[in-house]
Length: 72
Image (cartoon, rainbow, N blue to C red; front, side, top):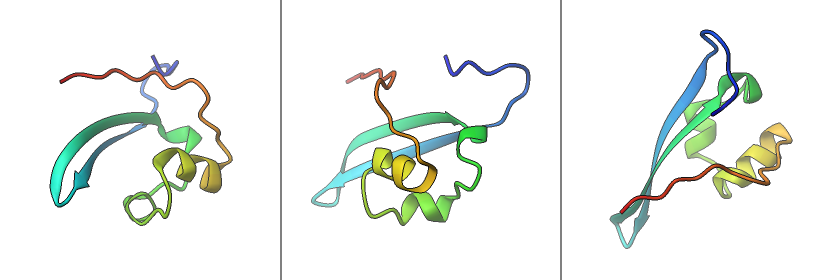
């Protein structure tokens, strides 16, 4: 789905969103490491905006058509 070949590195991120201290959303995110060369756990967790906002501000990547799957 990411268009990767061979053993290219990826970041696997589990992001939990809380509402009033209770988990309400769990995102499992897989992105190509080559697109985000300086991404770190600290940069991700200390972001001041949305995840897509981080992609744009820190890496110049604008997400236009994400491939998202939702399950209950």
